[in-house]
Amino acid sequence: MDKKLEPIVQVLQEKFSVTVEEFRGEVHVFVKPEQIVDVLTLMRDEHEFELLSALTATDYWPQNSPRFHVIYQMSSLAKNVTVQIRVPVNEDQPKVPTATRVYDMANWREREVADMFGIEFEGHPDPRRILMPPDWKGHPLRKDYPLGYEEPQFTFNLEEIDLRKPYAKE
Amino acid sequence: MPQIEEVNVDQFRHLVSERALTGETMLLNMGPQHPSTHGVLRVLLELDGETVINAIPDIGYLHTGIEKNMEAKTYLKAEVMTDRLDYMNPIGNNLAYSMAVEKLVDLDVPPRAQAIRVILTELQRIASHLVWLGAFGLDLAAMSVFLYCFREREIILDIFELCSGQRMMTTFVRPGGLWRDVPVEFEAAVRDFLKIFPKRVDEYEALMTKNPILMDRLVGIGILDGSTALSHGVTGPMLRASGVNWDLRKARPYMGYEQYDFNVPVRTEGDTFARYIVHIEEFRESMKIVEQALNKLPMGPVRSDNRKFVPPPRSEIGVSMEALIHHFKLWTEGFPAPKASVYSAVESPRGELGVYLEGDGGPKPHRVHMRTPSFDNLSVLDKITKGHLVADLVAILASIDIVLGDIDR
View 1 (tube, rainbow over the protein chains, first blue to last red):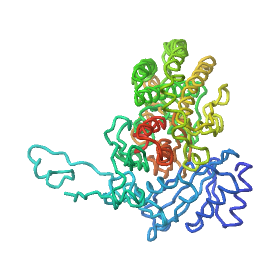
View 2: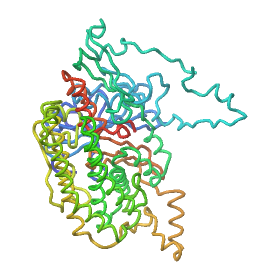
View 3: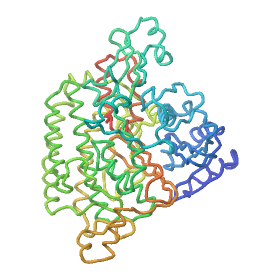
View 4: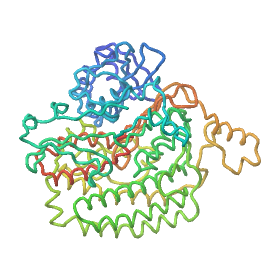
């Protein structure tokens, strides 16, 4: 672990009793959903993590507790260190408090995660879908969502497939 | 057949001002087929006369599910998708993805491959900035700059064709090194480019930098301050134009960037003109890097000889049974990667291009997330266009340097 990161992780461990993992020099801090806003605020205000580089999620289906990890990749420009905060989320209650009040960047990225994984960010100011159309069903990046394909139409079944093929018809 | 819902202003109640609901201000769609939106971006504008009150970007028109598709491919095959993300910067995307794979499976990259990667990504940065400058000029009605920029970009694309056989979408940078070594003509071609390009940059500057019409349209327009930029996750030239000296090539050097001497252009104004100047300065800095890398280009192999992850060279397959087996296994089954995750980031022409890559012990990635810079850079649009005219919005949008493939993925 980076020397500059050790005291920061220690503070997190004392205050929020987080667990810490390390892989190839990257530090992953596991935080409970209800703590995330406090953790991000603490990191930004007291440890100079000005930049939230990435906000994404990952799905561990069929495992259901936790099913998702919401990932906050944070960078400090002043100290030149990075740390990853991970929030495990269960399948029955995929909810995380929004981080938009801490970082403006979270606004669009949380919409993306909500769109792609169906994780609800409580208190989000603009909870619309961002990449998929507003009337889309399902959340594409979930592991139980099929990759999908388009049925090829030939002369003999053109009309039959046309009936159930979703596209804008007159 | 899905129900087509009618859009009304109620859905945007939380985004527009009260005056829009009474019809006092006008809601107007700009795009998705507007020429100055650089692709398929729709911006819902709330206008009071010609003044922008709110600008609400609507993205996703180019969403192709690249992250989902990559989960269904092996690590080597998924790389092809990365070219299509930010189509102005395919080599940079390849590099970002390859570096993530290398970190995940702990692969080494030979010094020659590192130097060639640096040369190619810097050339790609120049090409990307050229398209940016051309389109920027075009949006501000400076047509000729566009033609000149594409003339120079063509030389760079010819160099890529020389190396990889492709002008764009090269997939030339591979995990563990490069696809193959560059041909003997490469050095002369790059040196020719370096010889003519400085004069051409001066030419663009003569056309644009001190042009009073242009200055009128750029200076003081779309001011973004450093702390707002950071909070919005804005990176790259846009952040540096707002007075924050942050460049991943300097801060966390990769591919041997620490051995090259170059400056990071920073401006403090944060307006559209500052963004323009930073881009122009980056042409010169990139040229410096290319020249230095070319001068001390080491000899040697261009891919790792760790055969468990990197396919053997073609010449070996005919004479070595093991090489044939490795080749076959790597292209059919792929290699397993540990059940862990890494995040690795590079400085793309637009900012921090990060790749979150997670393996599940098998030959296919469990999750690939591309932290694409344009996405976060665009999110600040609403804040910096408030109170400006529609024509200024065009200038601001052009200065952000968005690539819709990069945003929508």
